Amino acid sequence: MGKSDAGVKVPRVAAGHAILRRRGAHRAMKYADVLNDVLEAVRPVIGRGRIATYIPALAAVDPHRFGLALATVDGEVFGVGDCEVPFSIQSISKVFTLSLVLARDGESVWRRVGREPSGNPFNSLVQLEVEHGVPRNPFINAGALVVTDRLQALTGNARETLRAFLRAESGNPAVDFDTVVAASEAEYGHRNAALAHFMASYGNIENPVGSVLEAYFWQCSLAMSCTDLARAGLFLARHGLLADGSRLFSRSEAKRVNAVMLTCGTYDAAGEFAYRVGLPGKSGVGGGILAVVPGRCALCAWSPGLDEKGNSVAGVAALDHFTTLTGLSVF
Ligand code: GLN
Image (cartoon, rainbow, N blue to C red; front, side):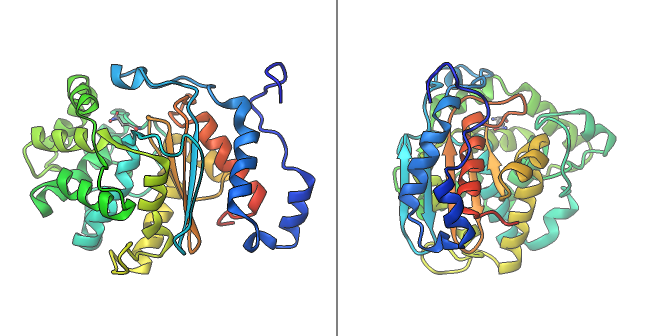
């Protein structure tokens, strides 16, 4: 597709693939071919949207990057484009901190954070005041701060617990924090500080606020590639089983994390994401989106251009195209 006719709408799925889907042949379908088709389909929208500029480190990223990786529960990994390029995972980290807290603490975290879609921007202060310091869900900033606070209390070192987990699950011991991003997050973190202090005023933060913010800024700064994230998200596709075959949490808890991802993982665009993609997904302002096909695979799409809700334009388009092409949505 040429530049002149590049519309926001992604080209329709080729007829041949539609036939494949009607026959339910996705089992035999080659993921490598699918990912290449998706890449070609989204090319026109790569670079669309606005990259996050709230910190200089993110504003410097090339908006024309695009990567897509898929890891299957059988251990196969496929990728196209910039799938090996590390990027700032930002709010995708919230899936992992929530999972680590649920694994250690069970359901008690739900006394301090809700699990309803917010319908508000991810860093909104308004709702928190109306709801007396109890965040709507764990995937908006306020909710993630509560979860990180709990992880800090449970482990004594939330950021190290998270890094070790992501290294183990991705199989990549080089997964690490980006110290420049972490420092920027702290420097420009006034709104997150406001959220944390406000919740502390309601007794909904148990550690010193500064230590919770620090752990949160570090978790946002983790740099991982699409391949790393697809692998690291597989425990949600494996119904709670980790890379080494041990169990992080029950099948039911995995289902619940996936459910909260579906309803709350893309902020106030979760309805639109469910409509277009139909998978549990979690986005971050670095332009990454982790999505899960329970029982089958985990995918990660990355492209830095964001829509007005903070979700990657090309990333959503890629996942939309993937589920359209394969029929692999939860619906
Ligand atoms: N570091 C960002 C923040 O706290 C993460 C937000 C996001 O990815 N949506 O504002």
